[in-house]
Image (cartoon, rainbow, N blue to C red):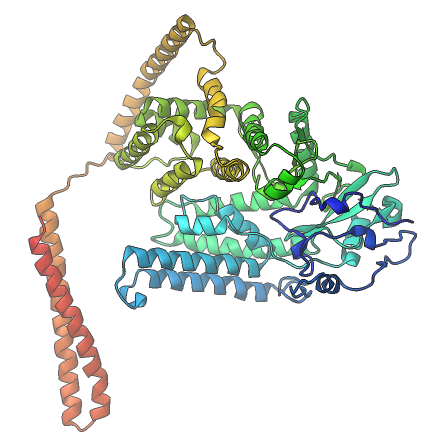
Length: 627
């Protein structure tokens, strides 16, 4: 059999899986593109042999690359059999080191100076980088969990969210023999009867699998995505350990309060198991392609179902220029401003017209064909907005347009994005603050990145519970805005979204004055009737709470607070004074008994306690001066 020829090798077009999950630099340390015509994969039953038997590391060295190759034993998790005990030690070791770092974060003495806001921010950024690197070392499960946690700004500080959003796969490729065994086991036939040619060198390697170029017996050029060996076994072990960690956090008196860690764990499990089901990915790709069947400016690879299973998916080979390779787009004569506009239009079309959208549209998952069309890849992680959710989102948008913090808060509660607490006043004030700042500037001058940063800053340590769908959308908007500005420095995502926002606000109604007035009157009447019908129920709920004693009245006395602070400070000062006297007396007795060296221990303790005593006295004096 002849080798798979690569007619586009001179153009250096990326493969459909040359994305953030893995690129050629992940394959045994090699960077750049690879001319696959240098390899031959005879599929007549004999072992596949490259024309050049040298390793890819040798090829990279010949090309001037200095990157060292990956080894199969580079990572402990990269084994055929996984030790639960070893994984338990590695995972809990990471968790305990993280808890120790969190404890040190609140200790002023650990900073070696003043514990300023700048020092704390630097500490958080340093810790976030360490977390990202450790998750990479822990392997596929934690790479994916970290990527999912990058959407949970309601749980983690913004520094953690930003660093986890940079989390990309950095894993070694697995051998061709392992890939061949998985293909033959799942599809039930020898590989030479399934494909005319099959390139043993992967185009890309990621934590969940890797991609090989191939050709079917009918002459179709395809790519074959093969799941990493033993991945399900690794997921089973890791997720069982993570369940114990989630239970620990849930039962913690501080961290478990107001956090559904077990619910977060269940959501992660569901998303992870769906992402490694390649049959599900194939169905997603087909649905996505049908949603754009009337648009000639969007292309989606076709799925070859006869050559697809839960661990193997065969897709049409559809090369393109990565949308963030701006110089290559310029060299190909493509209109970058048009591409920026099409990127925003494509995503808004997915979200608002279909409710089925790509949950991870980073630049590696979007390419541009030579005809200027957009090509989407990797459909393992998709989001869906249900019709009822879209109606509730409409209510939220109407509240934003009216600067009505109460309406926004109520609709967010209905969406499940906001937890009901006893006192919602601080939440309402936070929402009103965002609305006032958001509406002060024209719509087209808004920045998605700035808006999401404001939302995340307000959401942290508040009862906001952003669903994964919401955070996927916000992250996608921020990514597309960044790519759009790279394509066109004058691009503004909010400006591109204005027609869709106008359509959403009008909800398809005519926009002439009379009809708009009638429509507004109708909406107001419906709102009044809804409030009137719901009023008896709300009164009944309030009376029920009164009977059960669930209604709490919070009264704050400034004078009482001042007295309580002073009493607490005086109590601590008395305790320190007693300890100073006890340690000093012990040291004196030991010195008189000629145990001078032993007397140093209570002497040091007396000195440290004395410093604490002086600080407590100063705090008491400061409390007396406070209003």
